[in-house]
Length: 336
Ligand SMILES: [Zn+2]
Ligand SMILES: [Zn+2]
Image 1 (cartoon, helix red, strand yellow):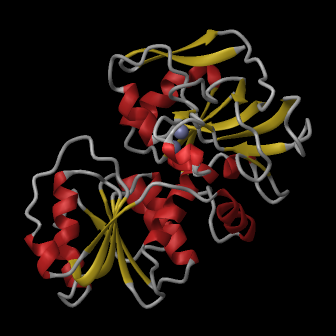
Image 2 (tube, rainbow, N blue to C red):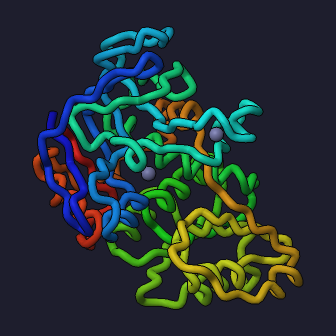
């Protein structure tokens, strides 16, 4: 089959690789759509991950089912979460495989869905493999994974409809966080980001005001929009020193900061304002596929207005370049 293989820093090539072999507990999916993820870009930019086939945000049709898999039929349209717990560690032995300390992930430790076919090694109906309701397009379905991260993160903050929430960093996770907050009925959602295409997308998702962090001071703009009180909750999706500092400064007394963005570098920070304002810092990493599939089905969340570019598998290199560099890119899809 054809697959997009990482051959060095910023060097993706579409090559012929062996077809995947179906394990007894696995399924094989013929991929329809696969999103380029911001997390992929961290590895894409570096040397040292040669041979990686990215792709963990995908949808397609089941073409083969392992002999120990129950309730999943060939021909099912689906999306899936790809992870392979070790089965040996403290968490696995407690039945909490999602906390496995040696988790292997689809698209990183084993081959992902930037390919014609992908192997999901542990296929359990409703736990790792999710059939698609008719209402969902393949593109919606390939957006379930990032949406589910936003859903999980936002719900860690348990926002009330009367809360004022700021989303900092308008990558796809931030944009979907805006959608989820609006879907939960939060009336006032502020958003701050840099690329014009993403500011426009945030507006479409219902954020108001949308702050152009490249042109104005985010903190000042947020304080101005909140009568100098600050916000109840900050969803910090950018993951750098400046945005962390802004988050601490713009959270009002008793507020929460949801840490969602991936920090590439360590922080220097003075915990005093967290202490004096009784702030809560919340780490967020998790998902909820069933809840998000329902939201997509109801139309309260959508990948329309988020997906900006589509490339065939033969142009996977261009897809990654676009996601990393093109100022008009929001979410880039590869369609094998
Ligand atoms: Zn992702
Ligand atoms: Zn484990």
